[in-house]
Length: 249
Ligand code: UDP
Image 1 (cartoon, rainbow, N blue to C red):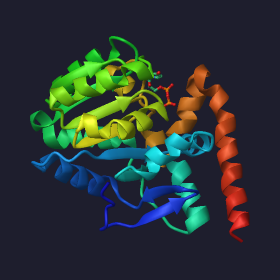
Image 2: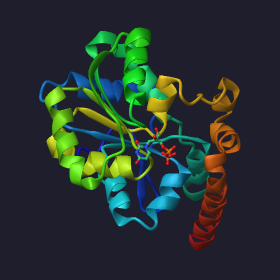
Image 3: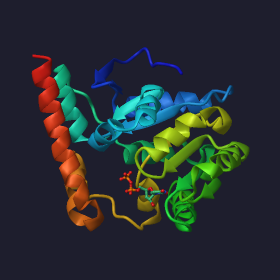
Image 4: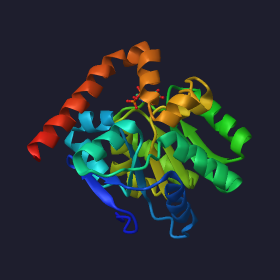
């Protein structure tokens, strides 16, 4: 694990949070990609769901604690950092990181698309190759059990990818990247939720205005019935922040 030393790292609850802008994130990851040693690195884009879900999942907490970079995915984390640390933390959302890397590196970027329902990663890969000119190292769906983890990790390793997009849902994706990082051996591995669905066009990216305001989660929760049951988790997050603030006096 390499802790970035040239930007601040805060602590939110028991999780780290790097104070880093999107352009600085792209510079940092670009350095990892360019390094001939191909040292593996994991990236977590922190959001309120991760904080709430990880409370009951110690392995998930460890995966975030051991990540090389933890960025603020959205406005919920910016709010929590302001409330609990009195700091203004810039956002570096998962989708923007992935798109930024693809735009910057084009054909020099070899990407493995891991996650989503069978068939979706293939479409995401085709679209990314067409739109950004990236090289497709490989694809695999995200519906396999722990007994297949090692096989999939070895498949990714053999592909020689520079960037691994792991989109298998919060928790599963971060733990997979961290647990198998030594086998995977990919310079940049990022847990990135619905990004493969968005690249494939099977899920819409929230409209630009919600992203500018940092409130795309409202769009996602409201527009997707499956996600309605997640709204209480966001409320739980606000309550957790308030309780922690009170506790710290
Ligand atoms: N997903 C997956 N394997 C699973 C569960 C989910 O590949 O076992 C994929 C799902 O198809 C979607 C992405 O992970 O492409 C994000 O899923 P979801 O929105 O349910 O998770 P979140 O990250 O919002 O918790």
